[in-house]
Image (cartoon, rainbow, N blue to C red; front, side):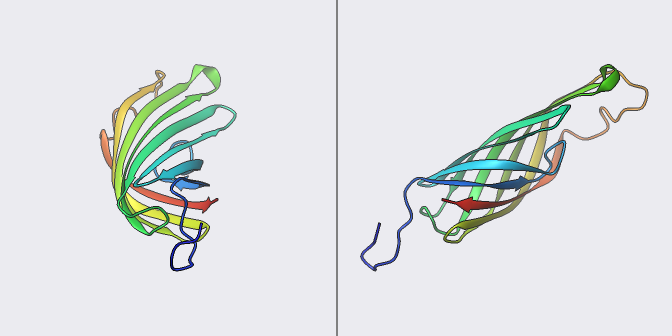
Length: 150
């Protein structure tokens, strides 16, 4: 779509795929799918390994119009589970609230921010040497994503 100035205007709804990083078990990075609308983003992310699963969703507010660099506020929720050998298991539910800035190029976007990670539930099978209960329920976190926009 061409605007009055002859430059390409971004579509009101856009889709981007990429890599999301942060304090996300079992690794610090997961594939991510994001839908951008006017002043909002809705995303899903996750990763599956042989004995671990992380699934999450996110909802955010972007302050600038579609396709423009912008400050953002983002809330995400994710569930992590691990079923190991010998009956060992681990399950966690967490939520993050972050804010930051998002740079948007023609086909690439970079998101960088920080905020808080809230551990909502943490369950570990009984074990002799565990870290259960040693971490606080609120931790600092970072938000970094690189995506390709269609």
